[in-house]
Length: 204
Length: 180
Image (cartoon, rainbow over all chains, first blue to last red; front, top):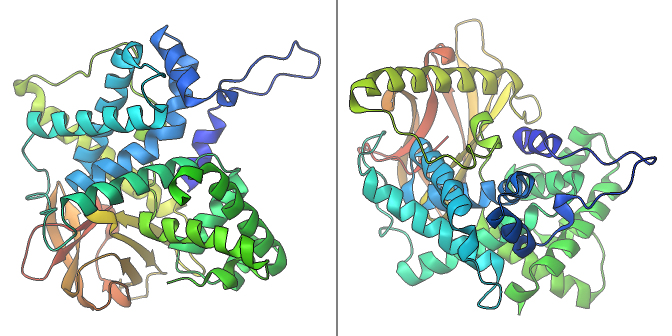
């Protein structure tokens, strides 16, 4: 979570009030950013990286297991995105689906190129976990949810991550963040509501 | 499993139903991985991925190990702490499995008390290991998982700076199911 905050700090600074307002990269849709990347726009590429680095790494870890190789695969994915952005056709599907495919293909290609494991062998994905269909579904859900988390304001994302994956109770979170318990609940509710809006397709 | 009402307080039934679906998806998805310092920036944008020629790979491996040790040390110093913990380590694995290792203050004898929480692992017995150079180096204890989630105290009586990560492996196996 600390790292995620530092990623936010890499964003372009907001224009000063006296300057001419500019369109920030993070106000654009994923599809618009991919189009800009196809034209060689580095800031759009950095914004896509901010939005998708954790979802891509998440898929890579699920498929590979080993952290080092998963990080290599994630970097491969963004290198592939830079090269192939011009092939994205927004009339043929959603940007997040296209990015998911780019990530999955880059990870599989990386596994073929670098079959050796750095920590013994990678875990067997087939057993005792879910079958291929379930695994693919689970991968897609994680991709969408992790991408949606990146749309939250920092304070709400931190709350969601603490609430769901730290093992802390709401009271412990309130103590840790030095917030009233009611504020923690209100912000958590707000965060879940934003996620519901963002994940509309997944909720139907 | 976290209870949604505990998280959000009182909301009307229609909104609660909407949030419940998100709640379920969050639990299905598991935690997103944290990004290392190297991963916080995109790769060189127009460059192809550079690969070390084979004759340089030993040097690259040494550099990678050194970088991992530094990251591990940085995590040790500035990690995202739970209450009372010196630092916290996030772990993840295939199929959405995840773990959180809270490491508490070292005692006078050199023990690092820890609490490991895992989720999404198949029922069975597992072992937590410290790793060095991509290999299992020292054990930190075994534990059992029943019904997917376990929270268990463990101990690492070692100088942690000498290692570069943790893994969880099934007992008797060397195949990691959770890695840092």
